[in-house]
Image (cartoon, rainbow, N blue to C red; front, top):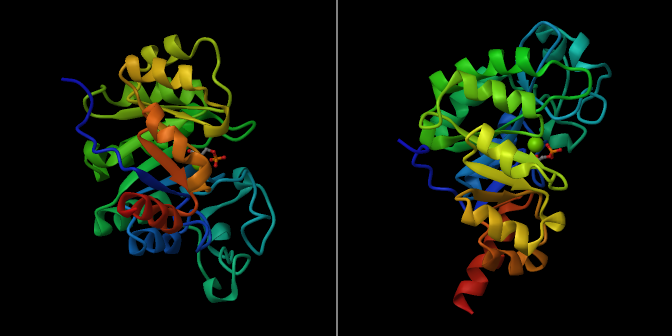
Length: 254
Ligand code: G3P
Ligand code: MG
């Protein structure tokens, strides 16, 4: 057996359709679906009481009407936050999504997810992975799921939860370290997720030769990104899936 038979999508909506709705919310995922996206990228981490939630930052100040670190918050406290108004009045009263609710929505919409295990400073990757992976593996078929992380320990521990035929793992990189090959081989990675402006053509070629899928983040200017498709990039993770798709459709017609 090799990896799960994932049809890697050309576009993945970053934190849901985060240009159109508050990031990492159920509404952002519905918006991505409505805009035609088949996959979303979402960040997962734990509250202080161990509840896995869909959230990017280590605290709630940027994306809610409250303050405080996730690490010292309970689910009950988190549910009191308005996580929509910061983005726009019409999103008022949006609530933080926990992993369970998000997985249910992804199944309802039959969407795929690139779930990023977000290990913020001072947080424990092992506890996070142990909370997330069993839920994820039980909820979604392997064909609709890629688990990624910048954190090597989180990826290595995720692999302990499932063999490569049952779980696609993606290594996230800002700038590519010299040891990327050994790191990706050690976790039997399915994909590499580089920061697209820093990826070099020769590096992309080496990744393709080694058999990895390449999912670039975060690409919001489709014309600036255009030349990268010829490098063998499989997917652009974007805040703007609708505009990106329109651009690609126009190029095809033109
Ligand atoms: O997974 C791609 C991208 O989300 C990684 O960076 O900070 O947006 O989570 P960040
Ligand atoms: Mg992310």
